Image 1 (cartoon, rainbow, N blue to C red):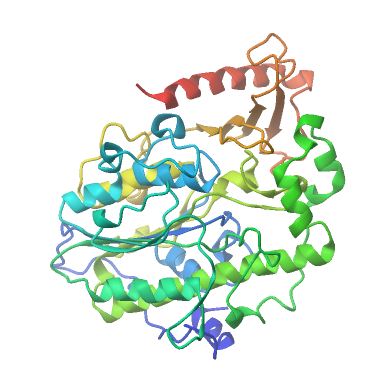
Image 2 (image 1 turned 45 degrees about the vertical axis):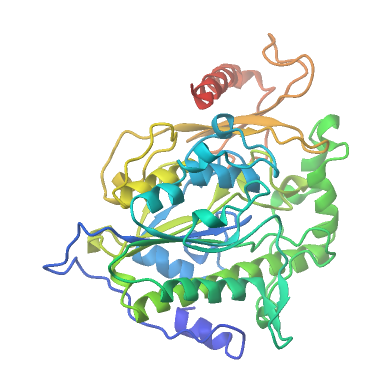
Length: 478
């Protein structure tokens, strides 16, 4: 389904009348000033996992605009977060640091003044950019509205359902589209801008029994589709976890609400997909507005998610734990200034949420602070072959009585996970009392078989334990 056909399907729905236009596919035209600082639109979804775009092989979900961005630009097929929870991941996106460096593990901790001054929005503003923020802020309780030129940020978990001044229904995603158009209408070609749009979708509405509250305009989408249940949704996979993990687990509690029956599973996943489709429509509107304003040929578009999301895998809902469904996210980047040979390509290198801030800064020609621990992706976007990471460290130390804390190492082939609160704590000779998981992602990409107790893989296990310690220390910084 192409974009024109998709808009036809949604005809009559809210905010779906964007006019299709031809995307620039050619080489950089002669005479264009490629040194001009680009505009940047950074789009962040909430709880969108990596495999929920058509361009990532999902044959059911309708994401024609996300797919267009990937087709026009670069698709990163192996993008991950270093901590899978909103507050911490968003802090890492802002400042390019692991949680053990920036120290934001909860929903109440704000950036300090000095820490915020080293985030990508603050640094861009110092460099002369007009900066705007729309949507779920996600870091701390105090909103830094005065530090932006345009602010429609929201504290906490915003609600999806609203009404306009005439009492008509408005979904939050549609409101954010209108705010994005408002920001763009105030931009000029003389001053570069960076707009960060931080969607709530497709996050559930916590404590609301409907959970996935999508725009009614998309109610008929996916009705005829049957969503296959994942293999690891079978009861045996959750039952294979040790007692400490199974007992009163928050992920299992939420699984009961969303996925515990075939009917709930279909309803929840389709609602999740409809929320993503709603975001996709907004992306199309933003691109059309950039074209209308003549800003499209110098505006980089980036789309990623703040963390993944279990759709019943391993008998879980939510995120938090280091399985692929929880930590792997979409990432697409479109730079209209790139030559034709750098369009419509995919990149296999492992990239992280901590890489976003350095990438945005380098694109804008702003020096990347030394304390940022991520790496700019600009070289990869240009087709260069820099020496790149072959593994990364995952950490989740959020304080919650029903979410066991974890650490992990993810390599190109292996996944090592340890839950770190059992006694005696690691390290001990045989790791007694610390529950570990080891997966061969090459032969077992769904993480169905835990090899941690298999003597055949003892050397691999011990090597990854040591690597986990090393990376942990590196992430702490100085």
